[in-house]
Length: 482
Image (cartoon, rainbow, N blue to C red; front, side, top):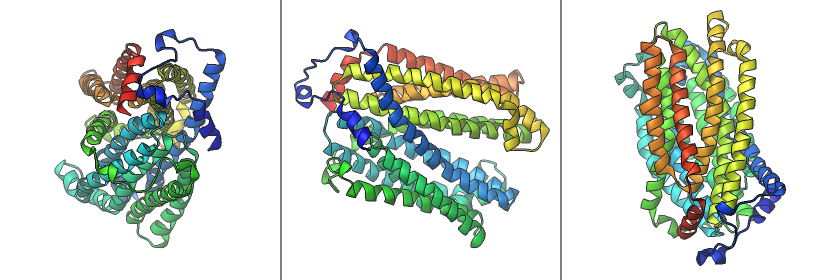
């Protein structure tokens, strides 16, 4: 934690000059970085991204672990828990994740401008808004089975899904708070407490699952209860750290009435952040739903589900990189340092290309054995092997756009990115998937080709936006806001 804090102090922060809107550092057009600057920036980003990747994987694993335990109870509990978890992701988790990501802009720029007390204010405001939002979302979860049956899903599976989601409702409140606390620490480059708390939580979660599912014989209810309890444990661990650690003394000054001010402005940015993320996440879930309409739906749905799970697992690496670049860009813009923000973006693009290439090559190399981890049927294994070739390309594109999206969040471009994602996935991606799968009869591979089309359009649009950006103007705007 000390090392991360020291690296941030090396960033040229000039709050007095910011107030007068005077920028003595070179502009983005005058940038001439030396090798030491690039190496130093790469160290900062990797020091941030490493723990953030681990945190993303650990927190994502909670739901996977619970479903793995439920899988030993039989096909019906497994189907119900899987369907319920997918419904929960669309109607709850992705919404709160998106709303909470608004803090990457607000807290990141405030920290860069040395408005340290505002980090606590922004975070408490977000916690209040997300807790209120969770109430209607929890009502949706309460009636999961009714909604799924109304959408034509199997009655027995929908009933199991409804039971599973009802027992996860307490955890939904904790999940919203967790997103706020994560961003609070992330934007001040204090990521190791997040890593430690997530590691402890995951370890405890395994014990909870074993005790509730098998010892107390609660079945899928126990697996869902374990998720709820684990999220609350993670929240309490972070709250204890934030209130006791000297590293947070200047950024967390206790409960503040100031958090109740300017709630509408936060909601506007948070809604744009949620729409930006949900448009992307929902399109992937729609592909799995569309696979059920193909010939041999059991095979297609199984392979698409395996592909989606693999995609989300790899995506956690990109989430860590995106969080790191969001923090670096927002910190530098808040400090009025356009040159630093541009350097951070270019260094991260190189890292993303290297990461995407490595992941793509590994995906290709393991394509013939990966399906064996999920199924013993030769037909599924061979089909997964073919899909992995497309996954290699989509993983590369997904990692690249995730970094550019992270930079966009650091700048506060959520509204623009929401329109980009709408066009990329719902004007190009999903229609292309339907065309390839149902008109050209390419099947599940055609559906994933549509996703690749959407990712390509999204990437091209984000590259264009970043290339045309006046970073000096963005720095001045960030200073004015903070």
